[in-house]
Length: 414
Image (tube, rainbow, N blue to C red):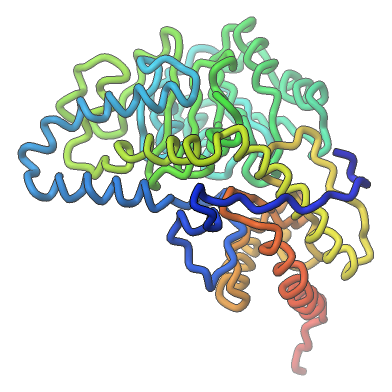
């Protein structure tokens, strides 16, 4: 889509009985939910399924826990089919960071102990890489990828940091702060050529991309199912291929520790694993109700419309009519530039998120990249054009007032 092309609001999705799609969720109608990308939202069907599992667990825990590994293994088969991978390559973990931590805990230093990350990486993942580099006595090298970099430019930025001392590459499939793709297939091919392990952080990919890890030549891939996949929170997939996968162990040693990968991840003591078991219900609900292809098209069309409407509202305030040029855009997420002074770093961005929720009744995401603040728009099937029109009409003027107030010099008493 051209940035100058006007986008028509897509017709809202509905349930088979004609009700609005949002009625399949328990989201508070008094709140405008514009930030599916952070914590997701669980359909009622999956909440009810998880509730039945929990009730069964509490009725007879001594019966429940010995049979839990077999139940998790069955859920893995369904989730693996959704992701387009072999069930024997997939382990279930609480979130993408947990899967990445398992990888960090398993890998030995083989060369110079250098880890390559990008400046778009998720902060917690990068901090984990820094801790691993300290343990190895190595260092982290950061590839600087311009926001507007196309596939070739992004690939070259990462490849330029590789060398004989590289022991691990960590790159996002879809970046969290900047809502763009990275050329993981090309990076993976180069990593294979050099014999360097590649870890792909696909936290946002399941649901936004069809079968995201299927064709990526990587050693490790992790993705959250509780974001765009709408699974109960605390559900993520760790996909591992090749000989290094046999070194992976869950962060908690339990009675399954002696089992091979991925079976050893299926037994984790007394954790509540009902989110894993109910995850296929969420994935199947979207497929049966609309189909994932239709859902992704709707999310993309709605995100395009949201970018147009919200971006125009901010542009009217600031006079900056330049669209945000994201080099490799993704379905369902867009960036619009915020007025100066609102959120030029992670901490003020989080404060703005909390203030907007408390004072304006809107759940929204605010991010920053290289000192520039953005609103990260995300859309799911329960969102409608009216959600973003409300934000543009009622909330953007308030954010403009907040920005002007923040720009006022602070008077210091003599």
